[in-house]
Length: 136
Image (cartoon, rainbow, N blue to C red; front, side, top):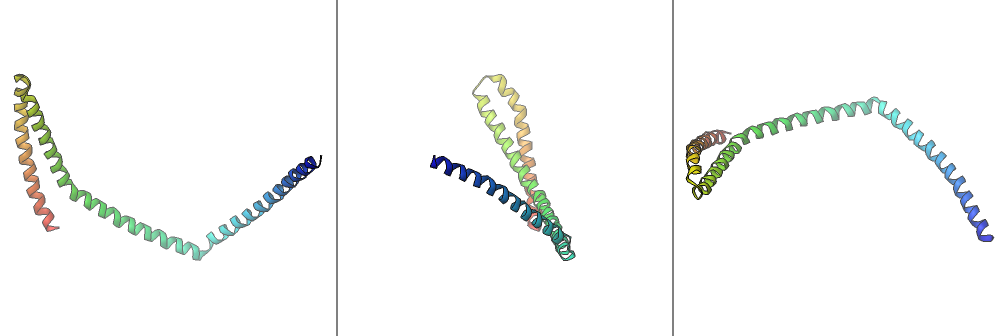
C-alpha cells in the first residue's frame, strides 16, 4: 500500500510539474521571440544585413564569372577527349569486326574514314587550343 501511495504521489507531482514547466517554457519562448523581432527591426541590424547581402552578391557574381570562364576553357580539352575516345571505340569495333564475318568489315570501312577525319579534327582542335591556352 505504501508503494502504491508513493507511485501515485510521484505521478501527480510529475503532472503538476510538467504543466507548470510547460507554461514557464512557453512564457520564455514568447519573450525570446518578441525580443528577436525587436532586434531584427533595429536599423543597425538591418544595415549589417544589407552589407552582408551586398558582400554575398559580389562574391557570388565573381564566383559565377570564374566558373563560366573555366567551363569555357575546358570545352576544348573535353571535346578532344571525346573525339579521342570515339576514335578508340571505332578502332576497337574495327578490331573485333575483323575477326568476324566479312560483311561487318565492309561497314567498318565507312567508319574508318570517319575515324581519320575525327583524328584530324582532334589534332586541329588541339593545335588551336594550345595557342589559346598559352595566351591566357
